[in-house]
Length: 56
Image 1 (cartoon, rainbow, N blue to C red):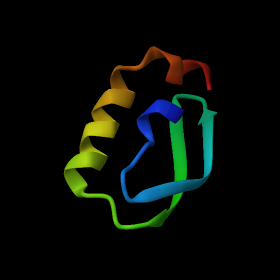
Image 2 (cartoon, rainbow, N blue to C red):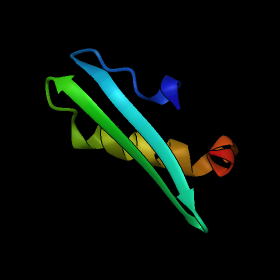
Image 3 (cartoon, rainbow, N blue to C red):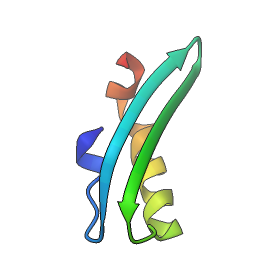
Image 4 (cartoon, rainbow, N blue to C red):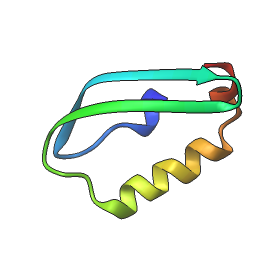
């Protein structure tokens, strides 16, 4: 998860991954410049393909 949340102009100040049944949730708090929507969409698509998320 950490590899996906590296940004040029923003810093992660907290993150949390939870799983309730089939529902998986990742919460990330940033400080700095806003992250572009295409970057967010790219992260979401990477996370969907990442089977390590099944073990959070």
